[in-house]
Image (cartoon, rainbow, N blue to C red; front, top):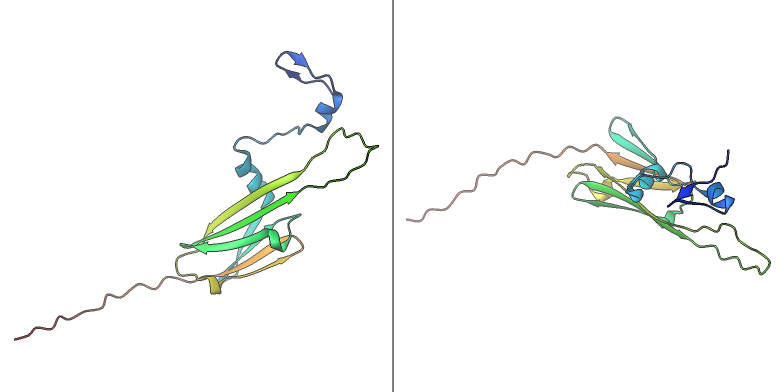
Length: 149
């Protein structure tokens, strides 16, 4: 059922304003809500490793990068879509563009190195294999001081 919205005491005059409005607007902060929705992630335990599968529909391999720093695996995905279609006879009612930056971060441990992690991107799904590596306890070495005399 279409009904006009009321903004600051005035009725919306254009019915298309209601038609194109999102019925479930995101709650602030918008970037954090949208990033979780856009980067749906499944993590499975494969015994000696973890498998992370992340849905990134509409992104290409070049739009996505992964970084390992201080034991945290950070996945960045960013894209700008700007379709310029020029036609003198077209009168737009609604014209939208997409620009977005999404990020997710996972703690994988301090013992995991960049070379240990394997990743591939196929059909909008990023698959990352992170081995389970436990940090070896550091054994304190005895250091002797030479005594002259």
